[in-house]
Length: 104
Image (cartoon, rainbow, N blue to C red; front, side, top):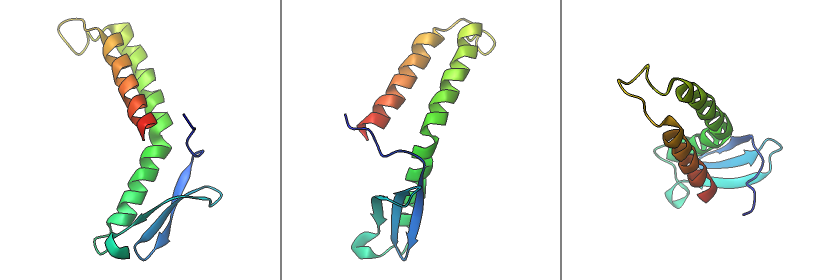
């Protein structure tokens, strides 16, 4: 699989055409409204949402992995009346997040 364009990304543009670009300004993708119009402001909102999600991905996975260490150590007993198999649960969640990211 080809690697994605290096992060971080940012949003530029106006008038309904918003570009997702590298920090150096290289174009990655454009978010354009229907027929070039963005009367609801969704093109910019979509571009900003994509950039935020992509730029935060690594930190979100890291946070999940760090928190999993705590839950594995306590076996969830502080939150639930019985021990849970946190390792299996969290590893599955991490795999699903990575699969979803790699599929995009």
